[in-house]
Image (tube, rainbow, N blue to C red):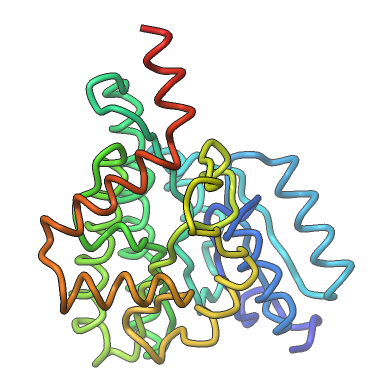
Length: 273
C-alpha cells in the first residue's frame, strides 16, 4: 500500500469501539497488515493516542472520528466524515453491557445498549454496504457473542442484543453474497476487556480470552466463514448448545456461570438495597 495515494483511492477499514478492548486489538492487527484505519469511539483523546501509536509503529494512514454511536448525531457524524472515502472493511465492534438483576437496572441504560449494540450496526451497515455493493466487493464483521445462542439471566438485555446481531447478520450474509459483499459474525466468549472488568473468574474454570487472539483469529477468517467462534471452550459450548442440549438447559447453565462471575457485584447490589 502506498501512502501517497489520494484519500479517495485509498482502501480503509472502519472500526467502531476502536479506543480499547477488542476494537483496539482489531486496529492493531489491521495495522500489521498495512491497512489504513478509521477509528471510531467516543473518547477523542484516547482515539488520537491510539491513532498516533499505530501511525508511528506500523506506518499506516489513520483517521479519527469521535462519535457517540448510540445517538443519531453520532451515526450522522461518521457518515459525513467518511464521504468520498473507500471503506472496504466495516467492523461493527462497539457495544455496551449492563449486568445484574433486570428489575434493578435503569431502563434508559438498557435502551442505550440497544441503540449502540443493534441500531448503530444496522445504520452503519446499511450505509456502507450500499457503497460496497456498488463496487462489487467489501467485508463486514459483526461482533456478537457466545451468549447470543440462548437467553442468559443477569445479562438478559445484552444477550438479546447479541442475538439480534447474530440473526440479522446471518440473513444479511445470504442477501449480500451475490453482490460481492462478505458478511461474517464473530461470537467470542469472555474476553479481557473493560466489559469483563467487574467480573470475577476465580471461582470458575473459565479464563477470559486475550483480545489480540480474538481479533487475529476472526480477521484470519473474515469473509471465509459465516460464524467465527474463537477459543476451544467457546467452540465446545457452541457445539453442546447446538447439538446436545436444549435452549432451556443452555440458558440455565449460562445463568449459573454469570451468577458466579458476577457474585461480588450482586452481593454489593443486595447490600445496597
